[in-house]
Image (cartoon, rainbow, N blue to C red):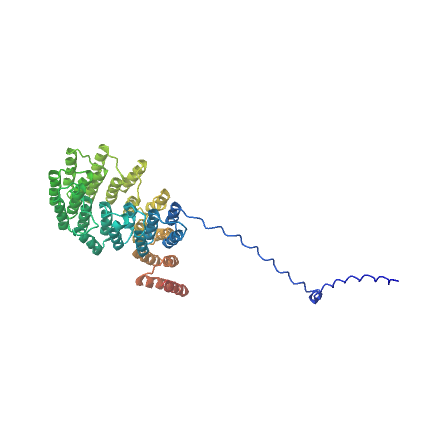
Length: 507
């Protein structure tokens, strides 16, 4: 007999879940906050964009600084298969020169000289104008290796020479002149007329007329067409003689130019001679030049008439100046701003301010813009006649017409108001000046403060001093003593102490 089958073993019971005792805290205490979920992974960064040469040049030019431009330049060079071109080198060099980083520019130039790309000389000429004089000369000497030529062009030489002449660096200029006159130099061409004219201009400007005429003699020794005195050469020399009052020598050179070199003078050269006679007060001789011009089929222009008008004005010949102005109109020459301004200054200085105002109105009708110089002449005339209210109105209205006045415009009126004792208007003008960012003349500021104290307007003087002190004004000793005396007389010692602290704080 088989034994009875055993019952199947009971299934194992699942273990009870573990319960933390922390869940059975007091009801007043809540469960701890669950930790925040982890942040999502950042998206994969896109691969860096490949910079091509035109875009790179634009980025370099528009970069906020020279250092940033250099960083972009170097980062682009790290791209696979990338090599810089003359355009990218030129953009970086100009950017560095504009930021006045000549050492960095010199390092880039040395790098450019070792590159296989071919450069063109015009790419470096803007750099010559921007670099300091010594670096400009270094670049000129390096140019043949950069452009793969034996010598630089006449234009490159002229640009560098003009840069050195205008920079007033005699040492660097002497180096270039020594190279120019050295027959063994291998990077400079023989000078042409343009180069000689720059040298003559330099010597004339420095008052070395004798040296300038030696250069003229050297030019005449050449027989080639590249070196020959031209109108610019003679205009520069004649202008130097006229400014020195040597009108006889100037006229002799003028005749020599016509007879010997067969050069026809233009209106600009005639104007140099007209101005020379006017400087010496010989206006009749200047006027005779007009007849000479017409006989030689050269009609005077507005510039010539303006010079003659100015010559009459300097001598106080108002009617003669008006006559020339009318002749100008009759000849069909439209007066320009220079002609109008010369006549306006003349009539205003001789008491005909209303006539000057009418001329300004006529200028506007003719579409000729009156600038700040013209309006300053009107302001001087109005103040000279004591018409200060009209001068104040002019200061108020002119900027609304788009004319930018300068500090002289306001100082003309301020000085007049202080000298006439019109303190109310002076205080109003001071507020207008400070509001527009202009500071009165130092003497006028002191006179204004003292005038207010003398008039018993100590409060206004105090307010004016605070406003002036905010822009860095410090009164002179006598003015300060007068201010303290006036404040203390009114038993306002606290205010005087505050003034003292304000001035000490400004220091």
